[in-house]
Image 1 (cartoon, rainbow, N blue to C red):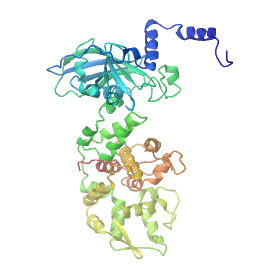
Image 2 (cartoon, rainbow, N blue to C red; image 1 turned 60 degrees about the horizontal axis):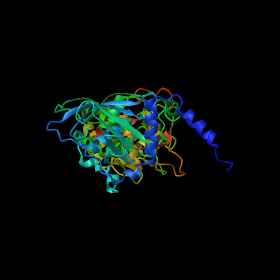
Image 3 (cartoon, one colour; image 1 turned 180 degrees about the vertical axis):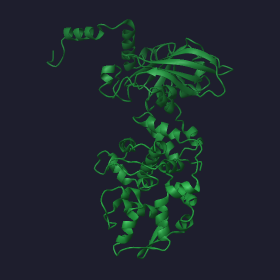
Image 4 (tube, helix red, strand yellow; image 1 turned 120 degrees about the vertical axis):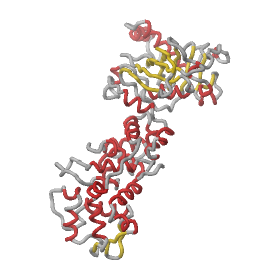
Amino acid sequence: MASDELDPNEIRRRFDALLAGRDLQELTDLARSLTSMLGPDPAARGATPTDLRRSLLDVPRLLTVTVDLGRSHPRIWRRAEVVSDMPLAQFADVLIDLFGWAGTHLWRFGLGGGPFDAGTHVFLCDWEAEDGEDGTPASSTRLDQVLQDAGDVVRFAYDYGDSWELTVRVDSAVPAPDDAPRARCTGGRRAAPPEDCGGFTDAEDLARIIDDPAAFDVAEVNAALSAVEPAMVAAGINAAVVEIATSLKGWPGGNDIITRAWACAGPVHEPTREEAEVALGPVLWFLGRAADGLPLTAAGYLKPDLVKEAAAVVPAQRDLPWKVSREYDAHQLHAFRILLRDLGLLRKYKDRVLLTKAGKACHEDPLVLWRHLVQRLRPLPGRDFMQQATALTLLHLATAPQETVRWDAIADALDLLGWVNSDRSRLRGYQVRNTVPVWALLSNLEPREPRQGLKTEILAPAAGALARAALSDSQ
């Protein structure tokens, strides 16, 4: 016997220890897990299980289902209401969303037994169906052909590596109201194991990889269930935000982004002329002074007397406890002026700052200026770092304008989208804050309370309103 091989007696001792104290249900779950890890029984391949599908219902039913995660200790479960006439493949997405997974792995349903049991009627995801696996494509089957009445059960396997198996049981079935959502979570307990965690289901193991194994939030689950791209687009949510929300669905922080995205749906209210005049006061000051031309030094900066005057107007510069006389030292003021240029309001001509054509149209009418800024701030979809960082920044400001911006959360989202520093290190919140130009505008709207300490960010309500307007593609 090789020195690194275990003695058979030691193997038996470890096996007995593994089984000790487990009840019949736990032993059944363990056996099913071991069987599923081996894949389908080769002897059963080619066999044709009985077609257990039922006839389609004439009237859709609202099914209340309880979904249990196998091998979970303590029990991890979800309860949901689903409309019975959805495709079975769409119901797979519902189950994946109920447990916060990303949907990037193979899955299958088993009717009449486990998803890998011989004789079970198996319904396959498109990937397996296209590979020629034995079973019925889930995309060609309706949910009510599988589940119709109270007591009906179907099993669902997801991620054959981590080997998650869900048992879905119908608690009740009633005629579906016309306005019933396609799927809605109504309850549950405990956090689901995260994607690709290795198959952990015990609270002790999960505590090593997630902050709170007992946490569960119905609102977050329903936000994920509602994150259907066409529905978000139809609701007028910015296409760049929809693209990001769809990409991050099922990942850490993804549900928070989806919730924020849906909070941006609906009509946007434009401020009154007086409100816009107050909110955009710092911008209007620059436009008014540039109407006659703002003189620059030979190095291209505002002259000292103008710097002192402008520093008192721009809130982020005004909050700093030191005085400035050179624009080179007034970083907040300089960033604000450069952003106004990038937004198409100011231009440099020789040794002066002048109004652009758009600036001339805006400087006498605050509402025209507001609409111009909404259009220029609107992010576009696509794989561009600045557009995605801008979209995430606007999203946070639009949905929590009076809170300190969660820059680290924005950095984490950008990390999941694939963005890193040039040295391949992870982005940090302060780097995003210092990179996104839109912050130079939104942090300088009025009226704004004085900043209490350098680390506190207090924004004007108009910052959230402008960000919200920029994220509405219906405008």
